[in-house]
Image 1 (cartoon, rainbow, N blue to C red):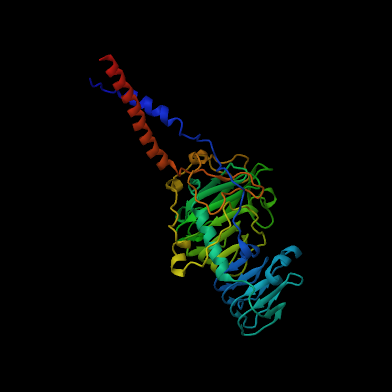
Image 2 (cartoon, helix red, strand yellow):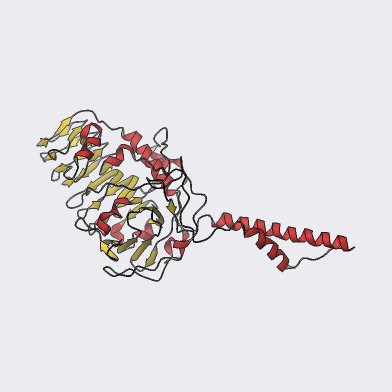
Length: 434
């Protein structure tokens, strides 16, 4: 005798089986298995690390390494004023200025500041001029190897789909709650519409902002201010050389990762806090306003106040330390670094995530987006051990919804299985009755 199965019975059976698979939505961190961090190699020791040509003036506060030609002819160039003795000692050969190609001088004054290491150029001096602490010699850096590693790191970091920012008109706010690492993902065309960018994370946590797309141009907004939440003061502070939130604790561990960008343009009306990893991009610093951190790019141009200030990246980029055996081909790295599929922006990246908007100098934080409490993705890609801090604690804090599709499909399968369980039970009971 066949018995029909009610929808309620199927739902009950399915829900009982599904309950065991659902993770709490309040979870914010991926468990760590050793606390390893990506190694930025020699590149991590330099404030400007450029694969190709660098046309820049008048100075860089940290160390500078250029794989191609260096054109300092506009108004000269000085290097390394803020380097410490320990930092100089850690540089290959003590070289705080490395030029793999020609030094285009044309009468300009080029110097490494006294006591801040020395400089070397592998090519020729074009145009002549005064040189101080800079000599001709072989480059101590394998730029192909270093950029293969940078592209590898950039690509791996981008595989982690983080939470989208809250968008409120021309204000974009990134809000994270994990004490160790917070990851966000935003499309370049969304980010570049911002007039002001706000960041609120726990003091000292590593922040990774993955920016997707082929180009990022701050002049589109234009973006004129970056504000970081000062946890001690309970308000947002506009980042600059003279001030930064919590004494620069957040800025020192802030990384902007642009793995697929082939061009990055900074607006001259702001100081851009944190370090910028754009290994395939032509980076235009503009004519005013610094980057308060390191820049790793394919090429670079900048003049006037558009310099790099010496605030080395000190965060932990969770992942392994394995590097590729050879450098990606230029045609591959220009579009898909490391030969992998380009990361796709979160669908919620263009949707305002909260109703609250940050007020500079105010004591209230912007309302977090709905996505900031979502469960972490269980499928984040890693090379080597999964990440964490240098002390081995914490992990990536996710505020996006990656992993929901697999869970949904799994839920459908389990619901069907639950229905089957109930159906089998009803058939057995019917058989016993007959």
